[in-house]
Amino acid sequence: MKIWKELRRLEARAKEALSPSTLVDLGQVYINMGMIDHSLRVADEGLALFPQSDALKKLKKFAKKTQLNKAIKGLRVRLNKGPTPVLYKEIADLYLELGDFGAVHGTAEECIRRFPDDAGAYLVLAKARLTNFYRDISARDGIEAVRGLEKVVELDSENVKAHKLLAEVLYRVGSVKVAVKHLRIALELAPGDREAETLMRETEARKNVEATLEELFHRVETNRNLTHAQTRSKPGFVSEDAIGPIRDSLAQLVELDGVIKACYIKGSKAMVKGEIKDGKDVFMRVVRVVTKAARRVCRRMDVGTFSKGCIDGDFGHICLCSFGEVVAAVLCEHGTPVDRILADLQELVAGSLYMTGRS
Image 1 (cartoon, rainbow, N blue to C red):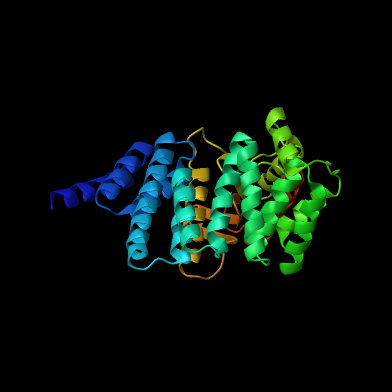
Image 2: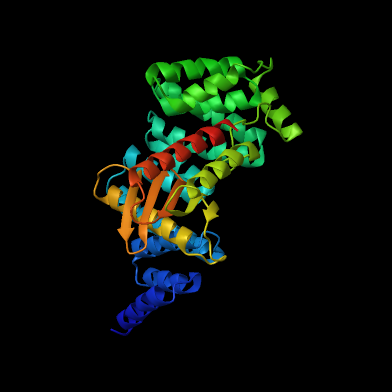
């Protein structure tokens, strides 16, 4: 009873005095009570409001780690009763998500000893070695990853994921011809696959490096650089060429009759135009929370993905348009043509995604 009273007190306090510290305290109590899903929800909702909070990021990381360890424990119990390749793969995938590469190797190798003809364990092991290769530029990990992926396609020639991973790593170290061969197979098996199509376009402007696999990887390790580095934009990165049109679009929106303020949010970064009171203006905070809630409701009700909507109140209207991590929103007065605002927001979001993808 004492614990539950403390929980109710913290829940009330979090609503009355919303701050990263109160949310972290509440999330920690949820963890102590074994309510991991509640803790993750608090962390996610808190980060929507306070995206720069290190304490909330740590809470989410710890809650996720606890959740994964709990899932692994349950799968281990099932594995002891009756081992199957699927259970081994699920456990290895969870270890990979945890970043425990030693456990990934141990689990995958145990599966390979028991089920030598199953491709799943080889794939998880190769993914772990690929992660190490891209992180450390280690020739040994890269070579072992390629050998593991080659074993996967030997056992399962129609494994699209393995062909794509092989193509990616071979292309990055300079083996363009072999990479293209695997990309063609992947596109035959999965026509229209965007990742494969994008990588295929990238290979068109690159030359093949004539060398053995070992020479290619050791050359990359020596240079501490991939031969063909990734040219696509990093997540969250927006060039100045992309920022300019977004800023202009926001300025045009706030010039419309009835529009009070407009904002554009991508991840933890945001731009805003209009009547902003000060650095603590709540508009963008409201936009983040409402968008997060709308996405969650659509997901839970299985009605698709939230893309746009409007909230009415004494304040007027809040119009929102969302796609991926991008959100654009407008606060406007009663009587403002909402349909037109939503169309403009949709155009802004679509245009910004094109610009940031192109930059």
